[in-house]
Image (tube, rainbow, N blue to C red; front, side, top):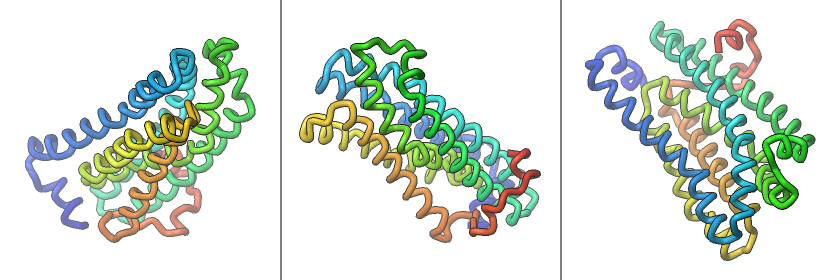
Length: 239
């Protein structure tokens, strides 16, 4: 794995830009498929009111993703600097502290969202007809928010060590699984918007497992151990 990080300081910048940016671009485009696929299948399987419910719920989902990206991008920047300085131990602490932040923040957001579900959806414009669909969808999404957040933020960490292809694969696996599960839960099991939400959460959970498997397979430059989860204020501020 040292060869992977070493090449960032040795290969031509033009080649590195292509090698790192192309998989990242594809991965981000694929990630956008989640909401699109959910909308298409829900529209065909449930109806227009259900699409309205998803539209109301999506901004809350975007807030969850925004916090995950905030932590992921901040941690990725700190990890890149640490790896460049050959300070692997610090890079591990940054990754560990970012995991801790994800757990704390996603838990807080989920708790607030679950407690104030109806008022939040009303705030985003939910009507009496749309509210049940929006509530069914976002409730399941909130319960699975930790998997959303971890998979998304960890993608940035993997890209920071120079392995954009693995980061892209993480998103591809989840998106493809979501396309497979959506029609099964919506049409076969007749779960409606709950099925779409469950398919999304399961897909993100599989992405989460894939990321963990990669990080602890020995292929990653990062070797996050239990003591790296100990909060260090200096590192948290840097993130």
